[in-house]
Amino acid sequence: MNAAQLLEFLVSIPSVSGDEAKISNDLSTILSEDGFRIQREGNSIWWTLGKGERPHLLLLSHLDTVPPCASWNSSPFKPQLENGKLIGLGANDAKGSVVAMIMAAREIQHGDFDGTITFAFVADEERSGEGIRTSKPKLGQIDAAVVGEPTGLQVCTSQRGLLILRCTAHGKAAHAAHAHLGENAIHKAARDISRLAAVEFEGHKGLGATRAQVTQISGGFARNQVPDCCEFFVDLRTIPNLDHAAVIAEIRARLESEVAVHSHRYEPVATNASELVVRAALEAAKASVTVESATTSDWAFLKGTPAIKVGPGDTYRSHRPNEYLLLSELEAGATFYSRFVRAYFRMAATKVAYV
Image (cartoon, rainbow, N blue to C red; front, side):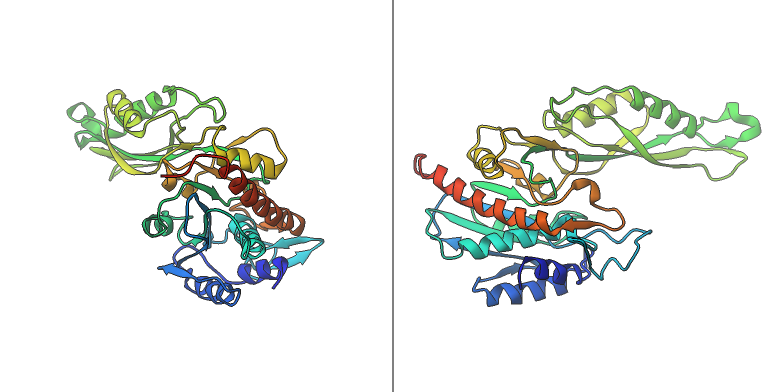
């Protein structure tokens, strides 16, 4: 299958997070026929090219999608090709990156380069990151990584993290007619929500500020009772210069409510522009500037490894009805990844040996 055919085939396989078995099975068969020796952990797959030497480069993307939303003009699992545009769930996020990486792997499969490349396509990226978290320990020591997500082939060197807090305001129940005998937990929560709206964290040059967003609230048991409990969730899209532990401590110090961590797996990440992986990507993209990303990805689980996020497509098409990828973008993505790999190993050859 050529790139367009392979993308159409992958989009036709429903692979909502938690249901990636079929796409993993079918893609493993195709890749094995290409001569790649596939390894697997759950529904995540990978293979390695090269001499088993360092540097070890990882090209990573994901096989799963979010559930289809409403308002699709056609079935999200029946890809439609219209005027050079392939429409279907996952075409943009991120099966286009998967296919582009496969095309690059086919091109360099028998190439001679000093180092090792692992191509990994993981499950459950959209939900919990379990795919990369369980696969990573089996990939060996990684010296640099490229995360395939739709960036318009712009080289992204930082992305936000995600911190979710569960806050509980405790009060004292009483009859609403005798409110002075109680303590209204909803009122306490409201005061804390107002405090959160005024919190200002240190900003980031590229990503801007982090602001607390209250996304859910629940409290009270009866319309004639002073509530003794009110719970609300806080979503914070954190930036690389903010430490999650410090943010949690600051919020706890400001609020009356009890603050518990609901999720903190997705740490913000950033890579210095001087890193070899960045310079090679800019050369391959024929660009001179990098960008930042407001969305999170499996890059969060590669913290400590020089990494970038770059792939074909547009982030603003993701998680929306009638998601699509232009075939011209797919072709450009394959060209980019191939150029990048060659540039990376050429540049790495001029550095001192890895130890």
